[in-house]
Image (cartoon, rainbow, N blue to C red; front, side, top):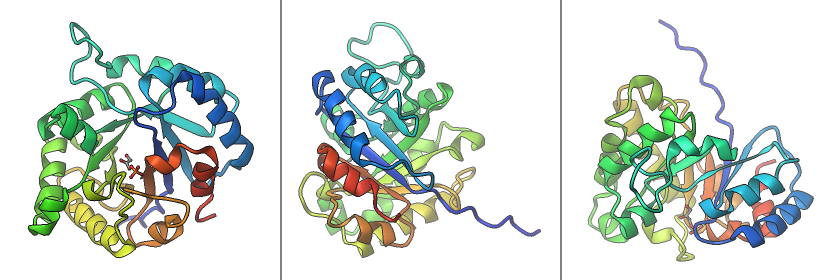
Length: 258
Ligand code: 13P
């Protein structure tokens, strides 16, 4: 049986603001960024503001439908006594269409396990949001030769509760923990190697679409290294923290590969 030709994967430029840019700063950011960023039909631009800034973001970006946005996390439950939790079911009403799951800062600071990440993916997909599953190894795991094992386990366990159709909807972000906020970027060759491991794991996992799944790289991405990283084999976009906080630097990143 012949397979359909593989589709080119549209590059994704994703900004994770983490706990920066409250409602008071969000409008000014959007105004400055949109003044510099030319719409592009060949790429997706998505911003993950802190949840408290979603309404400000939606209001400021209402004239720019090309700018997508999402939440940085959701709770494993949909409602109830979970103080401070964000229910995936409540997210679409904000206009947000994406959600991160499994960011290493959630795993480290809040103890999110692979099983929690799987439950969050279920909630995200039920709500009709586009999930980004974040995976990545610590320096200690890399140096002890466990890169493949860590990535494979994180993917296998997180997708376990998903059915075949949902597995095919995931976007992935490879974010080596040692490169996050450290200024230490994975080389394009390091990124290509890890992305190949992720894609091999997807090929081995029923329902996951290794051919079409977008795999983003995250970890100290900057205007100075974006072109080289995007050109690395298997890198379909980026998930940017620090360098996405400045609207000019973020606009420079989003102009890459034009
Ligand atoms: P930095 O770009 O600040 O290293 O953060 C990367 C990240 O964690 C994005 O989710």
